[in-house]
Amino acid sequence: MNAGIFLHSTEQDNSIFDDALLFITEYNEKGAMGFIVNKRFSRNINELAEFSTSIPFPIYEGGPVDQEHLFFLHQRPDLISDGEYVKGNIYLGGDFKTAMVLINTGIITEKDIRIFIGYCGWDDDQLEDEIQAGSWVVTTGEIFG
Image 1 (cartoon, rainbow, N blue to C red):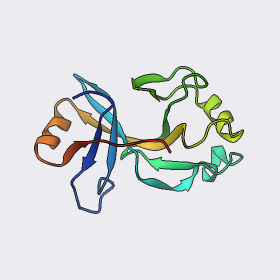
Image 2: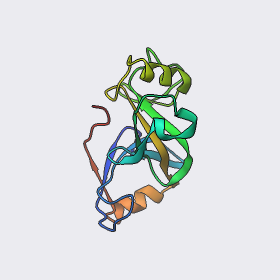
Image 3: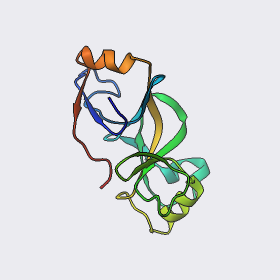
């Protein structure tokens, strides 16, 4: 398995993973990291205290790990520096202050960037075990737009 794949949850247990579409951003000998890309968070970014002057912009529930922090995926490395290449034209993170300026001025939109609260993480071999157990299936998907 590699970074840049999509997984769809087969679970129907009313958890955050119910009908979740995940995008795996990191996969190595230590484990895997990814984000749920199809579940909107209950608030927009401007409803968070530190971003109260921002325009209303959606946040997505990235996963149950580290929900005290925001993360983002984008496809504008020409405008947002320091992102970590994932696959195709998709980058993880980078200069968040610049990203917020670009969002607030309308230069980048939901077609360019997706912001997440939290992420999904697995220890070494844990994700493979879950796939083998039938909890996830490899699929196709889309992040932006």
